[in-house]
Length: 238
Ligand SMILES: Nc1c(O)cccc1[N+](=O)[O-]
Image 1 (spheres, protein in one colour):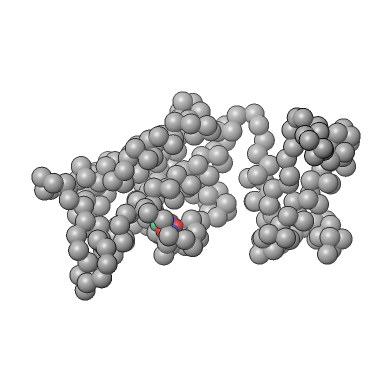
Image 2 (tube, rainbow, N blue to C red):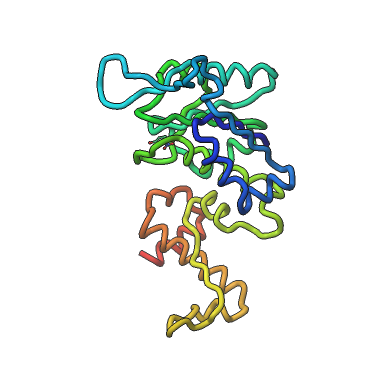
């Protein structure tokens, strides 16, 4: 899978992707990330990317020309790619959308705005607008990294041998279960006995109960389409 990122701060993307699962996936050749500086697609000597908003108002707006030039440059190879604009006005990014992107897109262009936003006409050249959450960020770069990280983790082989309970639980519609590791007793804070029992069936049931309990407490909105077994466990918790 290939990600092409349009940004005025390439170093934000380049620094993050070297580490962890993403770094390993890059080294394995499972994923490719190319970062383009929008300033390289400007036509003035000052490499200007923004200007004052028509109609007045605070802040600056990113101009369409660098985005247009960069998108046309990428499209010159005529290869299929999904163009995604990161913006607070977009549709909500979820684990299910990450799965959809991984399954349907061989290449994604992640378009990052800054300042008060970008010229609305850029949207004529994108396939969809995506938001990672209802809060104000300084730019789309963090959102682009969230999408890259969550999509890459889903690519077969990206996580190596370790299973990923987190992806599984989110895909099944609830939060993850609690995790513990050595020491068994830290200043009197003990690991739950069941996790030391070696009884895998009991451990699996305990983890499911804890996951559903956490979800009921913090994200009841996720509790849809539960299996009859999960629903039975949930009813016991209520
Ligand atoms: N929320 C936000 C923003 O404030 C700026 C760019 C992108 C996003 N977003 O994807 O959620």
